[in-house]
Amino acid sequence: MLIALPGSVAFNRLFMKLLEINLYTNDLAGTRAFYSRELSLPIVSESPLHLSFQVGWTRLTFYSVNLPIAPYHFGINVPYSLLEECTYYFAFDYLQLQAPGQIIAEFPVFRTRACYFYDNNGNLIKFVSRADLPLDDPNLTLADLFQGICELGISTLNVAQTTSQLLQQFGIRQHPNAKPSPDLNMLGDDNGLFIVSRLNSSWPFTQVKAKLSYSYTVFHTDTNARLQVINSHELYKPQQEDIRLHQSIESILS
Image (cartoon, rainbow, N blue to C red; front, side, top):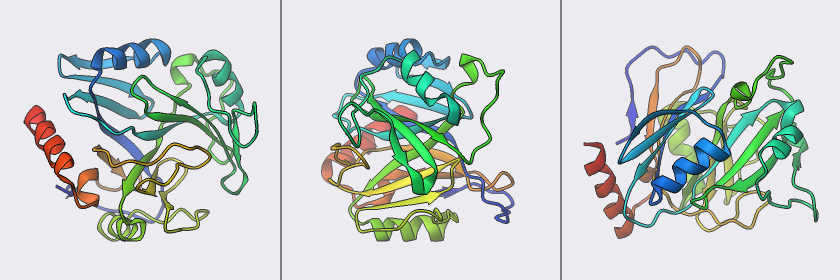
């Protein structure tokens, strides 16, 4: 169900944040090891069926299911001056981007840099640093390094249709620096973005194909706005395997 939770709305200032993200995995033990050990994220809730981590302002939860899960794509905000330090401290096998041996991609139009890597599930993750976000602080500790999950990929059969749905139903705005295309669009701002990608097209600067996957996101489009909820499977016409996955997930959450 697409839900807009009750409350007052004030869209005079755009400041979008992804506050809760639910994803799914068929390797909960491996996910626990990767995110708690490799990424040093604190576990805030745990059961035999789920794990929740705190990633800055975002609570990231993985639910265990016994069905194939298409890879997700999401980004974590880090201070602009510390992206290189992240690549040294977190010794992942970063994707080489734009040129051989180059692991940091430059997005000059967005005044952004990013590096990409995979988790244990094959999810495509990136550290994102943005010149226009005042996140730099000389007193930052490792626990403060991750500001929050700032981007979440949404795969769809029709980018224009899904864009219209997000704009009209949720008040999410077109990113001012993003040029919509049939394959890709970006909605939100530097604090929080939905990256809408056409099914089987490649995520930017990678050969990784966008696949339909189930996610549940709680977000707001302004610091004074009401909380809203998006179930990604309702942004496209589900196939039979998506229906089975949705039914399995609903039984876990009920």
